Amino acid sequence: QVQLVESGGGLVQTGGSLRLSCAASGRTFSNYAMGWFRQAPGKEREFVAAISWSGDRIYYADSAKGRFTISRDNAKNTVYLQMNSLKPEDTAVYFCAAGYGSSPSRFWGQGTQVTVSS
Image (cartoon, rainbow, N blue to C red):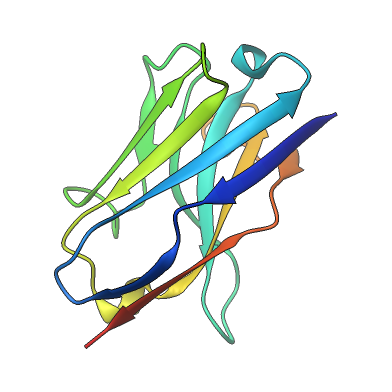
């Protein structure tokens, strides 16, 4: 079992930036690929970004490319999502997940709210 706790969400204006963090505990963090997903009101949860256990493979949704950066620090058991040039359509609850492959989703955090005002 892996426990995941997200932080860093909040309210930001269009064009602003936020950095989300996800702290992991439990089983060995470095064994897992990590990902970020988001769910807007009335919409299904969607993939945002993922990073392999070693950090050498990174995947982004088209909506995130060029604006978001995923990274991890295995020494700190933490994965990050740097979000720049935020848009109102980025408003959602952002979830951290651990698992395998390019869309890891075996273990989930509770989510953190990101709201981008226009």
